Length: 261
Image (cartoon, rainbow, N blue to C red; front, side, top):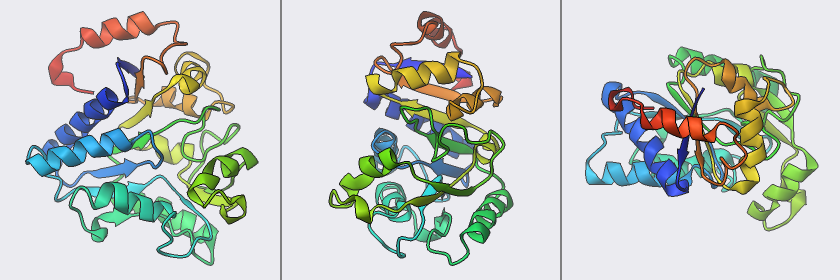
């Protein structure tokens, strides 16, 4: 696992956008896995700016979702499909045809989970998967004690997660779905390059446990230690609990430019 410490969220977004740009130059039709929430927004903003300036050609890129609410009607503004279309697909100048995600409104949710897992494989696999991290170490909606071999599946949201997400639903928790479809940890680990971005002091404990703690289901993100090419990008605040922070800074400073992320 490579750990890169950056000054702030904007620098992290620029760095990861550069990695995506390099990937698209090598593989124009790369399948990019995207996450929702506020943390990855600097990545999408930086990448969209590169597309607008002509520095990046994303016209053949493909986008796939990490997770989705269950039960929201198609087109609901707070479905993750709608969020990804607004924040990623449209700013990059892509069409909806370039986008794939699980069907959270399907009658048979279990079949929808299996279908999405299969669709990712048939698309050639995810080339680069963006991830955030929860304060409890979750990635996607793989809450603590999720199986490290789990596949795309339905998960029940914790009460705290529903409380946190109520701000997107007029501060009315009754509107927040109880269930989601999420890529499993095993599914995430099949991506060729997972990149986790964490910012803010509130993520410092989770980052330290993910990077320097044991691989354990109680900290789902720690499973990234098992991946041959996982990258964790953190700002100074999120890196504040890392015992090896100085080592991580030194190794990245000495890294040959041609290696990229």
